[in-house]
Length: 306
Image 1 (cartoon, one colour):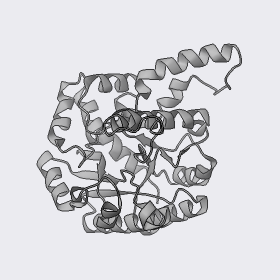
Image 2 (cartoon, one colour):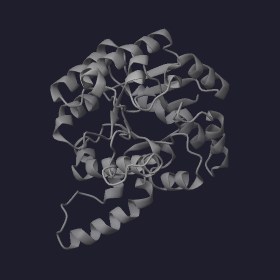
Image 3 (tube, helix red, strand yellow):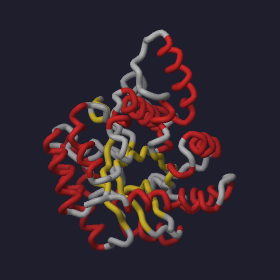
Image 4 (cartoon, one colour):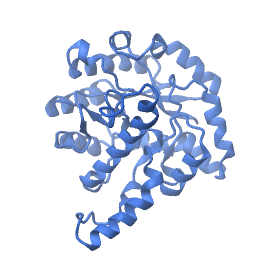
């Protein structure tokens, strides 16, 4: 079974109030057609992050609208789509309340969070109660890079450099801040899925360990209880439609095939078949290939207790 861990759909109200997205992001019929053509059985609908809340009033309004619309799609085609709810992350109590409504009343089996919101990353204490709830019910958290003023955009705001570089470092910094805030350590059973291979995390894992060891030797950094890479190996990453051998090799080395999820990043990337077919070029077993294409995510979703 092939399960897409990273694809998007947006309601018309959000598309028309955001600065970037076209109507293609709200065409569910075209999405189903693309899935059938590529042989994809299921897909997780995650939020790409937008600035629509600035025109529509609040993050809470956006969350309720988006979740209800996605819930309707899932209800109509439960065999096809899996919902990942968005939350009003500027309000800790409202965040937990919407998590409960989305999972218990609307049938969502995942949460979709941005790496940061208004400069506040996911290591902030406002998320503590959410993490407790998500871990309790084994609900996975899918993390997408913030596209509205990501890290570095204050210095360089460029239509090419921002998505190519700053989105990736948004994700990389988010992973690092969660590590240093000991969120991975304190919530060991919380499932994290980071887009785009976790940024450049696989490429700098060795630097984490070497630098941490050097700084611990002079008591310049707090004791994490283990080398950073052992905590980083706990997370999952998705491929986001990528077809770069170096990204796969470094991710396989750090995370292993059991923690990599294939994702299309549709409709941002539309050549779904090519990103699936790329796995044939990897030096991995057929079992590992099947795990990446859907087996790993299927296992994650089976652990959800609602």
